[in-house]
Image 1: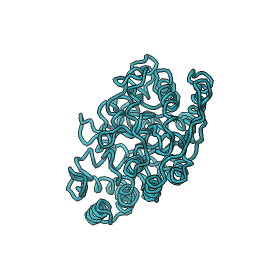
Image 2: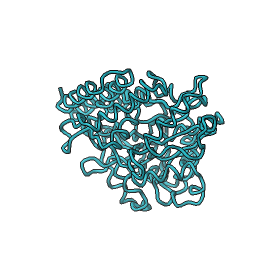
Image 3: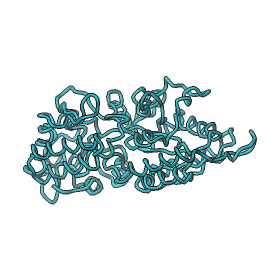
Length: 427
């Protein structure tokens, strides 16, 4: 499952249409339960189509078998593209699922158009310990002071390196780069190995990597009020120049490659260094790649900056209030130490429940415990801003492509800044 690298065109407009329809029509769903002993069936959509989906299916199956609340979850897994196409129209037609698991980057647009319910009272339910959630993870679902989403998974971007290629290039396989400059140095050495070996890959749709690089260098995308672009700066140019030097001029990696293609290079064992999310782990293990994972490289030694992303549970406004108790039953089950541990260990995801992080098996797992270190200082990137999806798709990713193609970085930066202003003003 890939998160955050490429946002979908047309989603925001579709969400807006759903919001207008709901304002006019209201909700007409009814509960399938009329008594405490009758089973309530709740429908659930998500985009976990990879091996993580198999784990999710087992968790849902176990919940359906063991829960004492007379609840049955009927789950529909689809690609995230499909999800973002179907959900807005489903809300409009009152055929949306009762609850969803949604990428945090897409949430703000739904909330802005009034198509998601406030879930703040979840943390007041019996058996829910609000203090057990990492504050940063919990706050991912907070928009304008209200909780619209409850954590399901959190993640960030991490550094992956191929230990076999490190050895061949004369590098210490147990000492990955700690800074962007060290990454460039190591990537150059690896790229000289030949035989189609690449030192580092920067996808043309790699907005998640770009946002981290910008933040590390002190660049800001938006001003304090988030109403104007702050992209036109020396720190932004430094970030653009770095990538152009590394890829276009030094040639340590492909100049025109998608995230999926870059993944395949890493999975084939021909890429030395790469930045990606936790979902890459399963494929690397399946392909028997000798690799390591570490917290994200920094602009300077000792810095601790990273962007926090994730997936959260949400309830469309088309869902009947009579379903809330049943939905909360499953979300509460999900946010137990047992399930959190299973999800983290089997999918190699950082835990966001403190009780899971403290578990001895989690601490023994080098991959999971390493990723958890980053959760302590990672922060959401402009959370709750409904324009981020459009800015990512229509401004940042095209700008990355231009930078990697050798276009003048100052011109790319100025053009991108104007486009951000235009997006924010609604033009």
